Image (cartoon, rainbow, N blue to C red):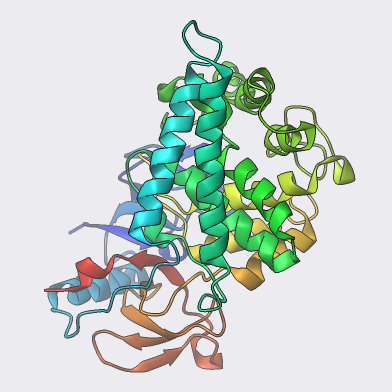
Length: 385
């Protein structure tokens, strides 16, 4: 008798039947529903760091996968004996709401850029509101209470573009602080990060949210947002040329493979290199209508694998030093299907956990636990009765 399960990619095998689209972070469709997994598909899944796959399989033919399925099923049946404390957010709800409101207003104003009835003054007022929010973000992130920062509380299933802009700004400012930017540099960086996707104001939503791979023509349209953003900012005379280039170049890559101008190396503004890392990390760890998010550790592996090709080494190192991938009290799921709570994150990507079912303490840096992998973050409310 076959079973259906969502398995960590390390437990899938040739011959299993897919139950959903398997899509990479950059939109490549590896498989569609009701296809038999092949060796080639599995190689692509591993290469593109797809963390989980929904499959159907015969437990007798795939006993290892069947055991993982049973462990997860048992964990889901048993009530968790504790209620987890809330994760203390770096950005409080008041500031988050204010930030999202200012970003919405900015997108609305720039979406009407050049139309009759709009004015440069309106655009500058919207940007001024963004600047005030950036100042508050810098102040919040400068609080010594937060030696590391996380963005889980900023995530949202809806209004992705606005929340993504906020998350990228928070991550970029944190990286800038780690590198040693002055307050003036942080303000410029925060504003550029907040506005990095402003060129998407007139990009069709169906392309931004399209499940599966974009056609060459569609991808060309989406890629226009970088140069469009630069044009909107120049039209409204927002910021100086350095600021506009920071927005323009956030999709350029060190090896010259990016867009819109295929810049390479030091020709790419340093602020753009910071925004690029923050942009990709938030994008692949966010929920989208067409794919599940990567775990923070998988996303970090992806970023590190692109050092020298896409990303600046010094930026990535600063990022690793500053980002709290698994905050204290975060509930995580392991590759063996069990749930645990982070009680010590001194090793940011391999924390110490208290297991929910048994109460055992598991140090993921311990030699005996190196095969265990965190496959995802579980919402705290899902662990309560």
